[in-house]
Image (cartoon, rainbow, N blue to C red):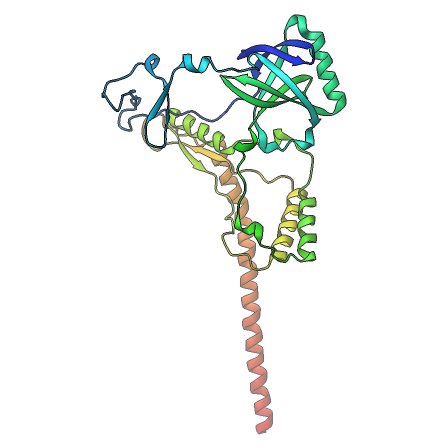
Length: 337
């Protein structure tokens, strides 16, 4: 990792020299805009709407538009003169319980590494935070913007979480909050039972970005000249209107129990099949395709058994009807005699 900021933690009269590192990274697949016909990259020019000329990056400034449409131009020199008391300093303001900080405030995470000469003071602050069970509320200036943040301990490292300011949090003004629908005790009990059946310890490694994996598989298939076909799964019922909430909750509980008994349901997989013609075509079927054929053969046996059962039932019904007709004729003959 490469540090993106150097400064110090101001803790009372103690200053701890640290380096700042981004603790997270986006793993999304990056795309370029290209010409569909030949794959050429699409380029954009920075053109002034007044003079129509292309503008160099160094000649671009920040502009703030007033309500009447007039633009106030601010240069980097203008912004550099603004006072930032926390510049190059992480100023500890207060220590609070972590549960009092709503996660909606958190914005981005950073790791803090101590300077070689500040390791002892760093460890002192880290251990004190860990023992207290609290987080430090701090102020810091990053990229010429002052931010509120928290300091906490994660895996032995001080971690800083930048936060949004209170006036940046939107109020959830939804109409349903003023309503008070009646929820029956039975519905609450069923919902609680469903929550309990789906409860467990959080393991982040158990979750994957299936969409990103599918996109990467699609790109690999395109490179190798293969078709990418989703493996068929059982049809999913859904989309209907829920009439009985209790019945829906019970069905969810039963499904959750079945899922636990049989293990986690496998995610939809993608099967790569060879292209019939063109570059990169492959004659041999993939292992997954062979597995499908084997599964089809296995499925054929139950189908034959089902057909045999149906034939047996039909024969039994026909025999019963014939016997009934014969008995009826015999009774009629006796009466006439």
